[in-house]
Image 1 (tube, protein in one colour):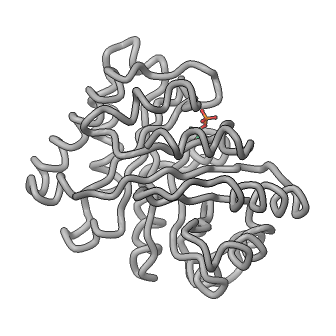
Image 2 (cartoon, rainbow, N blue to C red):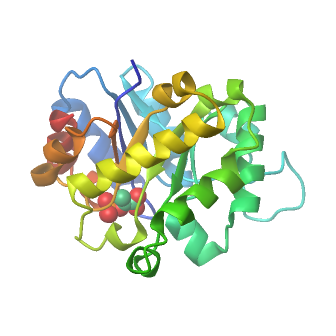
Image 3 (cartoon, rainbow, N blue to C red):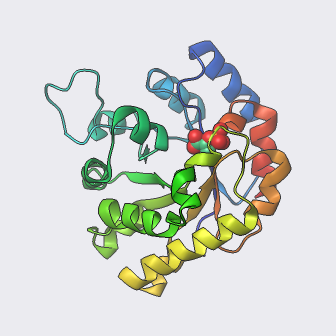
Length: 249
Ligand code: PEP
Protein backbone atom coordinates (compact mmCIF):
# COMPACT_ATOMS: atom_id res chain seq x y z
CA UNK A 1 0.00 0.00 0.00
CA UNK A 2 1.44 3.35 -0.94
CA UNK A 3 1.70 6.16 1.59
CA UNK A 4 -0.98 8.83 2.00
CA UNK A 5 0.60 12.22 2.63
CA UNK A 6 -0.54 15.74 3.44
CA UNK A 7 2.26 18.31 3.26
CA UNK A 8 2.01 22.03 3.97
CA UNK A 9 4.31 24.35 2.04
CA UNK A 10 4.56 27.54 4.06
CA UNK A 11 6.65 29.29 1.39
CA UNK A 12 8.11 32.67 2.52
CA UNK A 13 5.55 33.12 5.28
CA UNK A 14 5.74 33.15 9.10
CA UNK A 15 8.56 34.56 11.18
CA UNK A 16 9.92 32.61 14.15
CA UNK A 17 7.18 33.54 16.62
CA UNK A 18 4.46 32.89 14.04
CA UNK A 19 6.03 29.56 13.14
CA UNK A 20 6.10 28.52 16.80
CA UNK A 21 2.50 29.64 17.28
CA UNK A 22 1.23 27.69 14.26
CA UNK A 23 3.14 24.58 15.32
CA UNK A 24 1.69 24.84 18.79
CA UNK A 25 -1.85 25.11 17.33
CA UNK A 26 -1.21 22.13 15.05
CA UNK A 27 0.09 20.02 17.92
CA UNK A 28 -3.12 20.71 19.81
CA UNK A 29 -5.50 20.04 16.96
CA UNK A 30 -4.09 17.56 14.43
CA UNK A 31 -6.07 14.32 14.52
CA UNK A 32 -4.53 10.86 14.72
CA UNK A 33 -4.18 9.69 11.12
CA UNK A 34 -2.63 6.94 9.07
CA UNK A 35 -1.37 9.56 6.63
CA UNK A 36 2.06 11.15 6.87
CA UNK A 37 1.80 14.83 7.79
CA UNK A 38 4.60 17.22 6.85
CA UNK A 39 5.21 20.96 7.08
CA UNK A 40 7.78 23.03 5.21
CA UNK A 41 8.64 26.26 7.06
CA UNK A 42 11.18 28.69 5.66
CA UNK A 43 14.92 27.93 6.11
CA UNK A 44 15.45 30.15 9.18
CA UNK A 45 12.69 28.33 11.04
CA UNK A 46 13.55 24.77 10.07
CA UNK A 47 15.59 23.93 13.15
CA UNK A 48 13.21 25.41 15.74
CA UNK A 49 10.36 23.65 13.91
CA UNK A 50 12.30 20.39 13.90
CA UNK A 51 13.01 20.71 17.63
CA UNK A 52 9.35 21.47 18.38
CA UNK A 53 8.08 18.50 16.37
CA UNK A 54 10.78 15.86 16.71
CA UNK A 55 8.74 13.83 19.21
CA UNK A 56 5.57 14.10 17.15
CA UNK A 57 4.31 12.42 13.99
CA UNK A 58 4.71 15.61 11.95
CA UNK A 59 7.80 15.75 9.76
CA UNK A 60 9.54 19.05 9.06
CA UNK A 61 10.80 19.32 5.49
CA UNK A 62 12.76 21.88 3.48
CA UNK A 63 11.36 23.88 0.56
CA UNK A 64 14.51 23.75 -1.56
CA UNK A 65 18.23 22.97 -1.52
CA UNK A 66 21.31 23.42 -3.67
CA UNK A 67 22.72 20.63 -5.82
CA UNK A 68 26.34 20.99 -4.64
CA UNK A 69 27.72 19.67 -1.35
CA UNK A 70 29.38 22.93 -0.29
CA UNK A 71 31.48 25.79 -1.63
CA UNK A 72 31.18 29.32 -2.97
CA UNK A 73 27.41 29.45 -3.50
CA UNK A 74 26.36 32.48 -1.48
CA UNK A 75 22.92 32.20 0.04
CA UNK A 76 22.50 28.51 -0.69
CA UNK A 77 21.95 25.46 1.54
CA UNK A 78 23.13 21.90 0.88
CA UNK A 79 21.65 18.49 1.57
CA UNK A 80 24.22 17.72 4.25
CA UNK A 81 23.42 21.00 6.04
CA UNK A 82 19.76 20.06 6.10
CA UNK A 83 20.58 16.61 7.37
CA UNK A 84 22.80 18.05 10.09
CA UNK A 85 19.70 19.65 11.65
CA UNK A 86 17.53 16.56 11.26
CA UNK A 87 15.79 17.38 7.97
CA UNK A 88 15.61 14.39 5.64
CA UNK A 89 13.00 15.46 3.07
CA UNK A 90 13.10 18.33 0.58
CA UNK A 91 10.56 19.80 -1.84
CA UNK A 92 12.13 20.24 -5.28
CA UNK A 93 10.80 21.70 -8.51
CA UNK A 94 8.03 23.84 -7.07
CA UNK A 95 6.53 25.99 -9.83
CA UNK A 96 7.64 29.15 -8.00
CA UNK A 97 11.25 27.92 -8.07
CA UNK A 98 10.84 27.18 -11.77
CA UNK A 99 9.14 30.51 -12.62
CA UNK A 100 11.00 33.00 -10.40
CA UNK A 101 14.40 31.36 -9.98
CA UNK A 102 14.87 29.80 -13.40
CA UNK A 103 15.03 26.21 -12.19
CA UNK A 104 14.62 23.86 -15.14
CA UNK A 105 14.40 20.10 -15.43
CA UNK A 106 18.16 19.70 -16.03
CA UNK A 107 19.00 21.56 -12.82
CA UNK A 108 16.29 19.72 -10.94
CA UNK A 109 17.72 16.38 -12.05
CA UNK A 110 20.98 17.42 -10.35
CA UNK A 111 19.17 18.49 -7.19
CA UNK A 112 17.26 15.20 -7.09
CA UNK A 113 20.56 13.30 -7.47
CA UNK A 114 22.16 15.31 -4.67
CA UNK A 115 19.24 14.61 -2.36
CA UNK A 116 19.27 10.88 -3.07
CA UNK A 117 23.05 10.69 -2.73
CA UNK A 118 22.53 12.10 0.76
CA UNK A 119 19.79 9.57 1.47
CA UNK A 120 17.11 12.25 1.53
CA UNK A 121 13.53 11.95 0.33
CA UNK A 122 12.18 14.29 -2.32
CA UNK A 123 8.73 15.72 -2.91
CA UNK A 124 9.08 16.48 -6.60
CA UNK A 125 6.68 19.09 -8.01
CA UNK A 126 5.72 19.50 -11.62
CA UNK A 127 2.69 20.46 -13.70
CA UNK A 128 1.52 22.40 -16.68
CA UNK A 129 0.73 26.07 -17.20
CA UNK A 130 -2.73 27.16 -18.33
CA UNK A 131 -1.51 27.72 -21.92
CA UNK A 132 -0.24 24.11 -22.07
CA UNK A 133 -3.64 22.84 -21.01
CA UNK A 134 -5.52 25.11 -23.42
CA UNK A 135 -3.28 23.84 -26.23
CA UNK A 136 -3.92 20.26 -25.10
CA UNK A 137 -0.22 19.80 -24.36
CA UNK A 138 -0.57 19.08 -20.64
CA UNK A 139 0.06 15.34 -20.90
CA UNK A 140 3.14 15.68 -23.10
CA UNK A 141 4.48 18.50 -20.93
CA UNK A 142 4.10 16.46 -17.75
CA UNK A 143 5.68 13.43 -19.42
CA UNK A 144 8.68 15.53 -20.48
CA UNK A 145 9.09 16.98 -16.97
CA UNK A 146 9.17 13.47 -15.52
CA UNK A 147 11.47 12.17 -18.25
CA UNK A 148 13.96 15.03 -17.99
CA UNK A 149 14.16 15.31 -14.21
CA UNK A 150 13.50 11.79 -12.92
CA UNK A 151 13.69 9.04 -15.53
CA UNK A 152 17.48 8.76 -15.30
CA UNK A 153 16.98 7.33 -11.78
CA UNK A 154 17.53 3.67 -11.10
CA UNK A 155 14.58 1.71 -9.73
CA UNK A 156 15.99 1.70 -6.23
CA UNK A 157 16.11 5.50 -6.05
CA UNK A 158 12.32 5.71 -6.42
CA UNK A 159 11.82 4.75 -2.78
CA UNK A 160 12.97 8.34 -2.11
CA UNK A 161 10.51 9.99 -4.50
CA UNK A 162 7.05 11.38 -3.80
CA UNK A 163 5.44 13.19 -6.73
CA UNK A 164 3.33 16.34 -6.44
CA UNK A 165 1.31 17.13 -9.55
CA UNK A 166 0.57 20.85 -9.34
CA UNK A 167 -1.11 22.45 -12.34
CA UNK A 168 0.38 25.94 -12.24
CA UNK A 169 -2.97 27.55 -13.09
CA UNK A 170 -4.41 26.15 -9.84
CA UNK A 171 -1.63 27.27 -7.46
CA UNK A 172 -2.66 30.12 -5.21
CA UNK A 173 -5.40 31.12 -7.65
CA UNK A 174 -8.42 29.66 -5.86
CA UNK A 175 -9.03 27.64 -9.00
CA UNK A 176 -8.76 23.91 -8.40
CA UNK A 177 -8.44 21.13 -10.93
CA UNK A 178 -11.65 19.14 -10.74
CA UNK A 179 -11.28 15.79 -8.97
CA UNK A 180 -11.75 14.20 -12.41
CA UNK A 181 -8.96 16.31 -13.96
CA UNK A 182 -6.66 15.41 -11.05
CA UNK A 183 -7.48 11.70 -11.34
CA UNK A 184 -7.01 11.74 -15.13
CA UNK A 185 -3.53 13.24 -14.80
CA UNK A 186 -2.49 11.11 -11.83
CA UNK A 187 -3.52 7.98 -13.71
CA UNK A 188 -1.51 9.17 -16.72
CA UNK A 189 1.52 9.81 -14.50
CA UNK A 190 1.31 6.34 -12.98
CA UNK A 191 0.98 4.74 -16.43
CA UNK A 192 3.95 6.75 -17.68
CA UNK A 193 6.08 5.51 -14.76
CA UNK A 194 4.88 1.94 -15.33
CA UNK A 195 5.84 2.19 -19.02
CA UNK A 196 9.34 3.43 -18.16
CA UNK A 197 9.91 1.14 -15.15
CA UNK A 198 7.23 -1.40 -14.19
CA UNK A 199 3.74 -1.55 -12.70
CA UNK A 200 4.89 -2.55 -9.21
CA UNK A 201 7.16 0.45 -8.95
CA UNK A 202 4.46 2.77 -10.35
CA UNK A 203 1.88 1.42 -7.92
CA UNK A 204 4.19 2.20 -5.00
CA UNK A 205 4.77 5.89 -5.82
CA UNK A 206 2.65 8.36 -3.86
CA UNK A 207 1.30 11.08 -6.14
CA UNK A 208 0.02 14.19 -4.35
CA UNK A 209 -2.22 16.82 -5.88
CA UNK A 210 -1.46 20.50 -5.27
CA UNK A 211 -3.42 23.57 -6.27
CA UNK A 212 -5.91 25.43 -4.07
CA UNK A 213 -6.82 22.44 -1.92
CA UNK A 214 -9.07 23.54 0.96
CA UNK A 215 -11.07 21.75 3.65
CA UNK A 216 -14.16 22.13 1.43
CA UNK A 217 -12.72 20.32 -1.62
CA UNK A 218 -10.09 18.03 -0.09
CA UNK A 219 -12.28 15.02 0.56
CA UNK A 220 -13.52 14.76 -3.02
CA UNK A 221 -10.02 15.17 -4.49
CA UNK A 222 -8.50 12.67 -2.04
CA UNK A 223 -11.24 10.14 -2.83
CA UNK A 224 -9.81 9.56 -6.31
CA UNK A 225 -7.91 6.28 -6.60
CA UNK A 226 -4.63 7.72 -7.92
CA UNK A 227 -4.57 10.76 -5.63
CA UNK A 228 -2.53 9.87 -2.55
CA UNK A 229 -2.78 13.17 -0.72
CA UNK A 230 -2.00 16.83 -1.19
CA UNK A 231 0.67 19.50 -1.20
CA UNK A 232 -1.02 22.47 0.39
CA UNK A 233 0.05 26.10 0.09
CA UNK A 234 -2.30 28.84 1.31
CA UNK A 235 -4.52 26.59 3.39
CA UNK A 236 -1.54 25.22 5.33
CA UNK A 237 -0.97 28.61 6.96
CA UNK A 238 -4.06 28.37 9.20
CA UNK A 239 -4.19 25.49 11.67
CA UNK A 240 -7.93 25.09 11.30
CA UNK A 241 -7.75 24.75 7.50
CA UNK A 242 -4.74 22.43 7.49
CA UNK A 243 -6.34 20.24 10.17
CA UNK A 244 -9.53 20.15 8.09
CA UNK A 245 -7.54 18.90 5.12
CA UNK A 246 -5.71 16.27 7.18
CA UNK A 247 -9.09 15.07 8.47
CA UNK A 248 -10.22 14.64 4.85
CA UNK A 249 -7.52 12.12 3.95
C1 PEP B 1 1.63 25.13 -3.64
O1 PEP B 1 2.20 26.21 -3.68
O2 PEP B 1 2.28 24.07 -3.68
C2 PEP B 1 0.19 25.14 -3.57
C3 PEP B 1 -0.47 24.03 -3.84
O3 PEP B 1 -0.39 26.33 -3.22
P1 PEP B 1 -1.96 26.59 -2.97
O4 PEP B 1 -2.47 25.46 -2.13
O5 PEP B 1 -2.01 27.90 -2.27
O6 PEP B 1 -2.60 26.63 -4.32
